[in-house]
Length: 287
Image 1 (cartoon, helix red, strand yellow):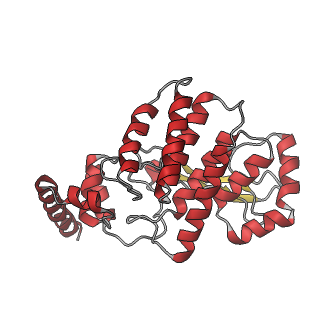
Image 2 (cartoon, rainbow, N blue to C red):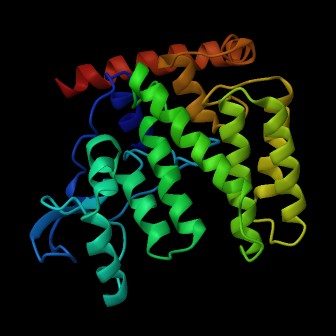
C-alpha cells in the first residue's frame, strides 16, 4: 500500500503538498499567543517514515516538513508552547522592523528559527527549525523545483547553518553537537566545499567520542565515501533506502557519474521497468 501511494505521487509535478487524509491529521482551532487571534492550523496525527535523506528530511508518504503554525495577522510563527516571559519577548520581536523585513522575504520555518534564538531557546532547537527551512528550498525531483531564487535561498540557509555549527558553545550537549556538526558536514558537501566538509566531518567524529552513537558513526562513515568522490547530489544513491533509490532511478533527475552507474545496474534497470508497469496498472485501476 505504501509503495502504491509513492508510485502514484512520484511522477506528479512538484507543487504544494496535498492535504493529508483524515487518518493523518486534521485542522484545529488555536489562539495566537500574541494578540489572541483565532486561527486554524493543521495538526499532524499518525504517519510513518522509511529512512531519510542525508540532510535529515524523512522519507514518507506525507510531505516533510509539516506546515508550521503562523498567526495570520501578526505573522508570529508558533513553533511551540510559550511561557508568559517568552510571549512578552515575542511581542516585541514581531513588532520590530527587522522581523517585518523577514516576513517579506523569509520562510516561516526560517523566522521560527530566528525567533527561537532570540527568546533564549537552545541552539539545537533553533537550528532544528533552520534545518526544516533548508528542506523547503532544497531542489528535489519529487517536491521542490529548482529555480534561481530557491538555489539562492538554499545556499543562504546552508551557509548560516554551517557558520552557527562552527560557533557552538562549549556548553552544547555532546549529542546535540554531533547532529549539528553532522548536518553541517552534509551542507558543506552539498555546496561542493569538500575539504571543509571533511574537516567538519572529523570534528563531528571527535564530538561523537563523548556522546552516545545513535547511528551517527555509520552516517559519518557513509558521508566520508560520498565526500571523497566529490558527490554534491541531494540524494547520493548509496545513502538512501533501496525503495527510494528505485524511485529516483525511475522518475528523478540523476546527478553525477556514481548515481548514473547505480541506475544502470541490471537489477535496478529491471526494478525501474517493474515500477513503471505497476504505476500504469495503478492508474488504470483508479479510473
